[in-house]
Image (cartoon, helix red, strand yellow):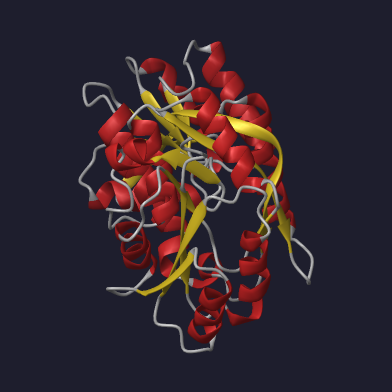
Length: 334
């Protein structure tokens, strides 16, 4: 018999989308699953609808979060789970019918120490903005090329509701037991930290809904400084060599966020820009240098915060021409 898949799904005020989400789970071609739906203090009728669905299908279990917020809801759901394979779902999204079967088959084929994922597609009644569409294309290209970990510091390289992993590997990676936000990016960093291999389906498995009340649009835990905090947390834990000089390249908004965070961490760094108008100026009590200083430093580690794609290509060319290697000597923080 196929192994049980545990689907952990936090639910908070998801009533406008919840029926469509639940129906997509019931319509899965893979049948041996359990759904741990965790109500995170909803003040709409989400809990009522969830309980109605438990009468339709005994594979659905409704729980109440033991704390406040999405991490607590995830922990509550996982604690009650029994499956060999673990999957997270978001209550405003839609699974394509073959999603669970495809992810399960990938794990069966590749065994433990693997995280399975696949293509995603954003949708919205109001249309999808360029930023989200570009992120979708980027994620799907990572799946096509099977090279997720090469881009780990750029953005979250696995969509939060489109992965499946063996329970043993999930536990080894720390599961949902973290207080770091964004929680989905933190978990993916830990999959990377503990050496899980990413295997990808090349078809769309998950329909990712965009709407104005999405938590990732509105909560402080998902703003730019939160993403930079978590990138720095794992950079210093996994890749930073304290014997090498640290350089930050970029004087724009992201470069300034990075500089502030490094100052708060009492980390020494050299701050450079390719804008000659800023050279020699003091920002946050730090003098801005020319980027050319990089080639005079001995074995620097460079964090690139420049987001504009053409400028980023020029920076990579400069660094490569000076024999600096991506993810060893320089890191792209978008």
